[in-house]
Length: 161
Image 1 (spheres, helix red, strand yellow):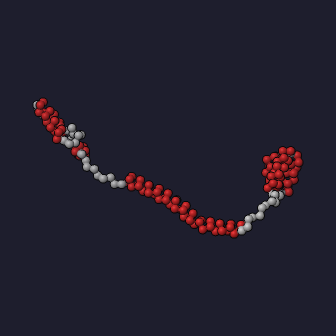
Image 2: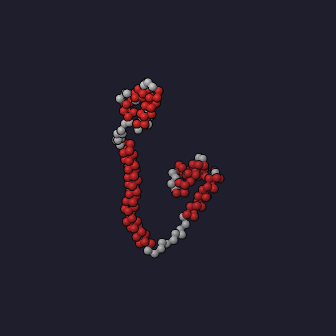
Image 3: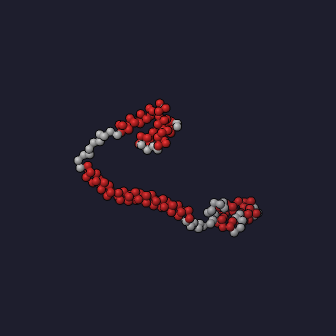
C-alpha cells in the first residue's frame, strides 16, 4: 500500500468505517511508515480538539427566539420569490421590446419616393441628354452657348446642369 491510499484510509479508520481487509493492510502500512504515523498523530490531535465536550448551554428562551425568526423568514420568502421573478420579467420585457423595435425597423414598408426627372428618363430607357445634344448640333456658336446657359438656368435638378 502506498502513502496516498493510506492517507485516504486514515480518515475512514478514524471514523471506524474500514473494512476488515483494508484495516489489516492499513495497520501494517502505518507500523512500517514513519511519515504516515506522523500524519495519523496530527489527525488524531485535530479530532481530539474538535471533540471536546465543553459545549456551552444555549441561552434561555433560545428555542422560542429561533422559532420566531424562522417563522418570519417563511413569511418573507414569497415576497422574495416575487421580487426575483419581477426582475427577471423586467429584463425579459426589455429584451423583447428591443427585438420588436429592431424587427419593426428592419421590416417596415419603405415609403415610395418620387423619382427625379433623370431617373424617370433612365427608367424609360431614354437618353437624358437629347435636349443638350440638339442644342450642341445647332448651328451658330453664340446661339449654342446662350441656349445652354438658359436651359441650365431653367432646370432645378442639378444632374441636368
